[in-house]
Image (tube, rainbow, N blue to C red; front, side, top):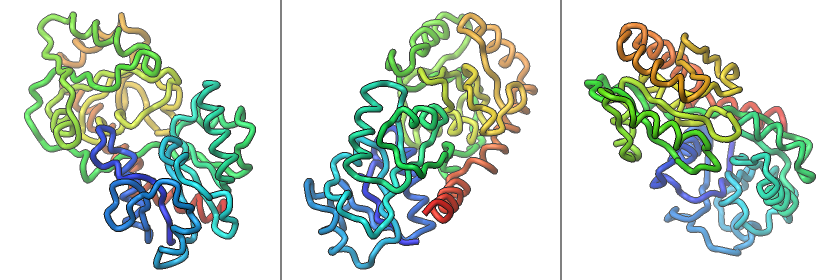
Amino acid sequence: MKILLLAPDQITKTNWGHQLFRNEIARQHQVIFYGGGYFEHPYVRKKPISQVLKETKWKPDIILTHHLTAAKHYVGLDQITNIPKVHICVDHRDLKNDIARHAMLFADHKYDLIIVRTMSEWNSLRMNPNVPEKRAFLPWSVDTNIYYDMRKKRDIDVLNLGNMHPTAYPLREELREKLVSFKNIKLHTIRARHHNFVETINRSRMFVSANGFNGNMNQKYLESLACGTFFLTENPFDLNIYGLVPEENLDVFKNVEEVEEKVRYYIKNWRERREIAKRGMHLVRENHNNVVRVKEFTRILEEKL
């Protein structure tokens, strides 16, 4: 399939997961990237997409945009009526401002298909007056060529990293304070990115985190599990979608007060922790890698368009 992918190159961003997914799309399809950071096709603000199409070496089968913050800058998509237009939606949250901004995006670009990555986004789409009839759900995935078990010495007891914004992740600050208070626990909270982040996960006996305000799984969960690191978090409401089961592939806590007991239990019972982590790793690497997910993405395009 030939795809014109309208998005900037975000490989240098701290959260590079979206770019890694787009790179896998490019491995499985013929893709022309058009966006900031691409030398061959640099993004020119306000250039109509009709002009971009004239400059490409072939006519795409679809035009793909990814994420509101990038997609809103492209102009003239509404004038393209002979090529299906698809948007991968990220952060379509159940908030008036987010819904209004996405409603404007959908109205301006006149998409044929919307794909969302979380169930809360799927549920919030019904509140958007301009959402197209065709829509699909595509769960998160991870690049297992980058996130894998490096067989490193695990000299960190607890890893606690991630966005600490109090509105987006309301429990994380309280969780961090609780973890810092634990005695005789080696805690790591220093920010790491890219391959250093992967190495830090691999040095950790467990990764302890908390959900965002919408209660979904997020990419960090899969990244940790893919490395064979035990994962402890709040109970995301969509765990079952990924086939993840508490005490089988990871574990969950009901509240922050329960965290210390769980942490100390799994540090002491290392064989049980290791077996749970191993089962989580195998499940994620087999079912939730980017290769599998892009194939699902392709099936969605073939069935919906």
